Image (cartoon, rainbow, N blue to C red; front, side, top):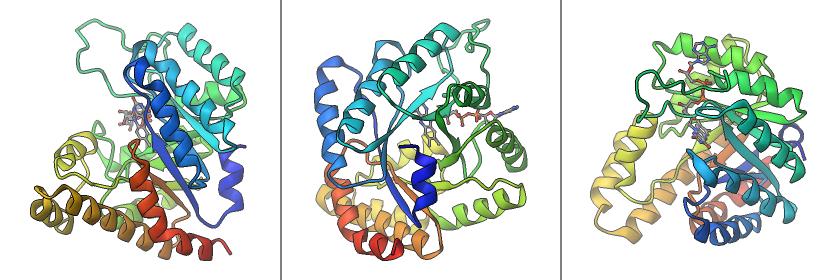
Amino acid sequence: MKIVDILNSKKVSLSFEVFPPKKQEALESIKKTAVELTSLNPDFISVTFGAGGSTQGYTADIAQAIENQGTTALAHLTCVRSTSEALNHIISNLKEKNISNVLALRGDFPKDSVEGENVFPSGFVHASDLVTLLKKEGFCVGGACYPEGHPESTSRETDIENLKHKVDAGVDFLTTQMFFDNDMLYSFLYRLQSAGIHVPVLAGIMPITNANQVSRMVDLSNAYIPRKLLAICDRFKNSPEAMKQAGIAYATDQIIDLISNGVRGIHIYTMNKPEIAKAIISNVNEIIKATNL
Ligand code: FAD
């Protein structure tokens, strides 16, 4: 099913994200994780796209395992360091596997790139280039967005102008980078409306269940960490079970506030941990049920 149709038919949607393994030996176990997540009845599960090499095909394999359970899958795809031939090959593979939803991404600029390397051999320099191709191929296409600004952008205004260009290229829905302060999202949504961006926006929630995650997440996303979350990490960094419980409670609190304020899509970065997804769902399932009545 096309994700845009799911989003249009529900007052609030809930989705999860898994990532493929680096090694083939772990592929079956990640497929099992994805299948376990389908038993929680999410509206869809997204599968990220690895940085390079042979593991890139695992995204389509895992997406197919999810679809085989009757759950919609969203396959991520990046264009950095990909040739046109490689992109066309992946697109054909997704079509063969009946995957109809793709999150079109540029991918991070490679840190190991040497001077003179053409990191965009397909000529696709921005995610919007990939959006145009995927729309032509008939996919329902998602795009990424950044409530606190993309790390490379010179200003939030320019970032929103570039985002508008990407949406105009054919994006059906957006998923946000993780954020830990809901006010960041509310002000971003306001700026999107002002810029004439009206596609559905799914709020990306990352449960912090291990205190060491915080510095990694800040490096990755530049996200602001509120005092309340810092205090949790500081207090429980040496008590893994307590940290997990507090991190789940923090994510739950964020989700309840988002739904109460009319946000219509919650995307949980489940990080291949079904037990965390289960705990959050058991905290919010009645809230989601009541909202969708
Ligand atoms: P773009 O939309 O191309 O934007 C990148 C930068 O270029 C921004 O600063 C933007 O303002 C600027 N820009 C865009 N268009 C133009 C233009 N026309 N002119 C000038 N500047 C422009 N990475 C992976 O490797 N695999 C994944 O599976 C993956 N999944 C992700 C899922 C989500 C929800 C998010 C938020 C990120 C994900 N990423 C993933 C990370 C993503 O690849 C990086 O954040 C990357 O740096 C930017 O990708 P993008 O698609 O947002 O790029």
